[in-house]
Length: 164
Image (cartoon, rainbow, N blue to C red; front, side, top):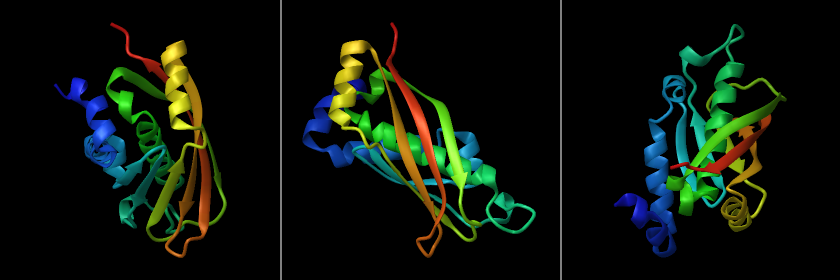
């Protein structure tokens, strides 16, 4: 029922669909849950995620661990990818195929990740429809409480139509 209703619902209430996707994704990756990463919001090709300041994800110098920052960025990128593919999300198979991260500042305190798909979402879905698959990058900025960039990341997503 949801599979049939999602494209129709998206045309009427996209904000509701984005919120449904966010809630579904929230507990779907056990490692992200383990690190405490929270997917805060999803929109059309964009997402925000938060990594709280917890002792379990600190490194030897008392700042956020590089692995936790990577998990935060990858989670936000998945949210942005899902937002871009929202009208067809239930009929695709997304895979994060490549990721690059640059740590630019010691990450202390809670860290926020802002992810965005720079390509046009409708054009990506048109390529998916025509070719059965599409590849695109999601850019992510990781920011501390003061709004300073602590890392930048790019995640390449491969999205293909589900088989069968």
